[in-house]
Image (cartoon, rainbow, N blue to C red; front, side, top):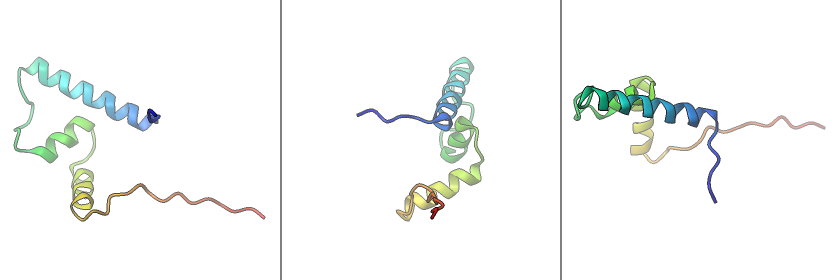
Length: 74
């Protein structure tokens, strides 16, 4: 069953497409290939700090979605 991608996912995919098209037009990578986290941040148009936080959570196997709270009504 295909997963539905929300608007945030669409924006991230659009950022990736734009970044890789810039690399194509440039004739190569815009940042050094060894700068993985910087390239990820640039491609997704997010801060390197955010990428570092996610990488840290991946390393410690604590990557999960934010908990959503629901107000209970009586």
